[in-house]
Length: 72
Image 1 (tube, rainbow, N blue to C red):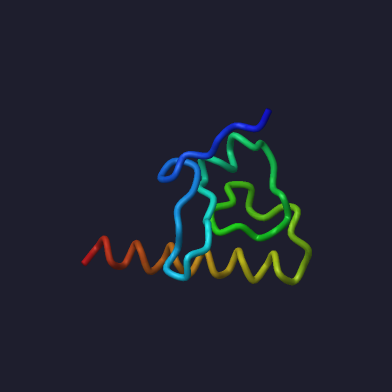
Image 2: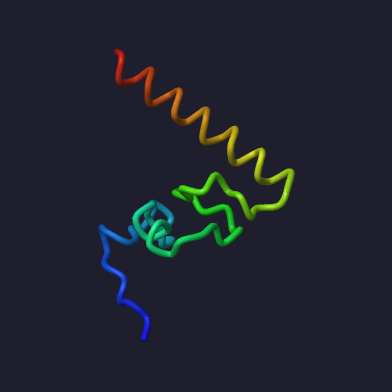
């Protein structure tokens, strides 16, 4: 039997209405599914190149922006 997902803990809806799975959900899943999920805690290890590198660079850029905002 599958676990029922809880909105706000396991997923949320983005501005376009799509379901976005949280880092918590992925950690409980236990592995990277290879789909390039936004909150993948496994550094996209199963995403094929060159998409994996693009996602890692995007994540790095977003983190830098967040750090800049936090400092200001």
